[in-house]
Length: 408
Ligand code: SAM
Ligand code: TMP
Ligand code: ZN
Image: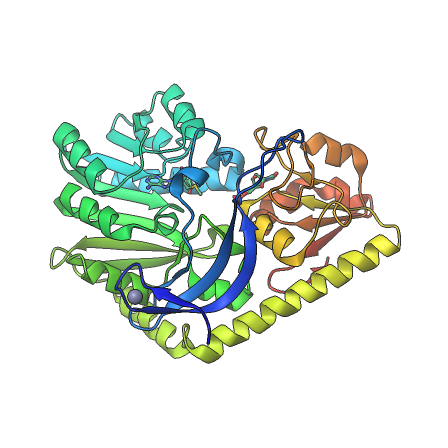
């Protein structure tokens, strides 16, 4: 019997389809001298038999993940900076064009999106619990509340600032297990004709590409149009828009409005039909996904062992949260990957969680010129390939594992 749990959205039965075993906190990079024991949890993913929501079976307490040392800075990618400038400009030209419009962003991180909104002189507020990035946002002159968004937070914002024309969240809603409280808050805070827009990794893309590394502690939910429509309905909201996005390995931007307030775009029915045809949460689909993950693990470890036995230098590129799942699930440590290079100062000089591989600055990688680099930041491949021509020219090869293991 596979493991099961109660669905966090509808109370139905969530049946596990993927068990990654014991995993560390994905963004908890360790000082090399640390002797404190690491925190581990069980990473098990399942799908609800009633509402189809794909979710984790074990929740990690939020304070363990989002705190004053949270190392992820959204502005680390040039392409994502462009993406979020586009998002802000779109809102400024549409939903925020009215008088005194107000936008709230959940998980604003280092202010990558709100910076453009603030520059335009539009009323805004970021809600960001991680002090490490909330402080960066505040220092940029952007209004930020250092807090977790939930119903209580929404009430406090409503009392202080009034209703919001737009509530926006990128790569944040899927991080929040307690969606009931969040959606009650959204409903209270949203203007009668306002929109709640959020973008997150799309489960259909995860299945299609076998991007199993999207599964880790922070990603509690893996949305589809079907599961989001059901979630919205339970809160008297409507899913009125969907848009597929090419960022972070494939996402969907969902637009919710108060029930009856806006017309449903045709794209919603189209995506729902596509999902139904793909039988995304059918047993055979989920079993097939698990079989491909097992193969990716075997192929990757076999390749790395083979290269090491030939005396090749293999390193990692991008100390992503995603890489925690790959390294710990595959049992890869410093004996197979000498170091991981990453541009984030807060990760450098530390060890990857669980697998204890040193994280080094980009310059060390450039000076070292290894034979092979495992591309853990594969979602930023285009940007990285463009700037790593020297690595290729010197004979360096990329190792990928999404959608399957290959050497480029
Ligand atoms: N929006 C940025 C982006 O797309 O790059 C940041 C995404 S980051 C992966 C997720 C962010 O959500 C973190 O900065 C985290 O601190 C924040 N977060 C986690 N739980 C939250 C909550 N309940 N309310 C608001 N923000 C939250
Ligand atoms: P993400 O996939 O969650 O956005 O994380 C990307 C990580 O990769 C982040 O730690 C920054 C790092 N990175 C580099 O080291 N070099 C790069 O060129 C890019 C785009 C990201
Ligand atoms: Zn459910």
